[in-house]
Length: 187
Image: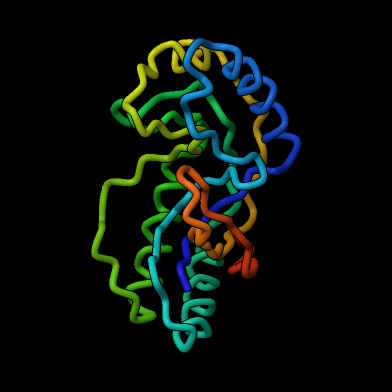
């Protein structure tokens, strides 16, 4: 199964962001972007890819240990940005060093559980809002998100999420995400 480790902002914090995202839909060209479903908004810590189900018990145990070594910390959604002309995202502020440490610990837990983690990149905390297939100009969207300041929340758990890729063949159909379990509560 295709998995990733994530932090899920609480629904009230996502609703705050949703108000600003609704305004983005009124900007020219918004209909050409593939918007992520709000039920799928999350902060990915480590993308694991295809994972053999036999590795899940050890993965859960290792993620639990990683989480228990991490005290709860405060985050808030903040502003926005882009990756080139392909991905529009909401930013994250607060205890970013703690979030990065948790991402590193999640990656290490997966490696120790026997999952090859080939795509190691410097962790950049973000929440993906939309993708562009045609390379749209995302600057107006980033500018509109710049003043956004969400309310802080206490990050207290790590979740393991299954990503089900589209099978219908419909162009632009997003993957479906399903929490397969709370991997661990932070200590």
